[in-house]
Length: 215
Image (cartoon, rainbow, N blue to C red):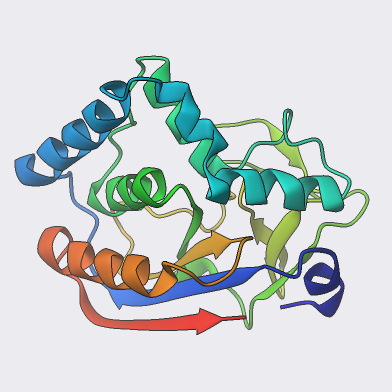
């Protein structure tokens, strides 16, 4: 983790999970859990109050500290929750991506997901520089200046707003890194990394799951 990023966002803590797995279509039991997760938000007396949860507020504050407008560049957890509140539901992609989205909504934390076959060398979490962009998954080119970004030797490939197409998980993926991104400290990260490992094992034939908390 880059020291400049840590200085501006001192609460940053990462929950990392690596695993060998497959990425088939989600089984019905996982789809049912996704449906229940959506309904748990919609059944709240004030569903939009979820958008003021401490985890989401900490992400917005971090973006502001980096000079990025959190109303224009939202954390992916907030974007997913807004989608649920709007009645659009969570996307159904494959078992691995669906697990990530499920944990993200439940934890209120953004999660990066990377196919390690397409990651080159070590990964550094730093502040995006002027002129840096990449093609976001299903999106336009993302302006990375001022965003917290994950970079390998080839350049940026992920952020709490949107990951890149270069390292995205597909049906061919067999080795993944998932990163739960907290801007408000490590509370809850042990639970969510363990929960994700369990879901990988249950629904994506996950093996050799390893977890690490980085501060």
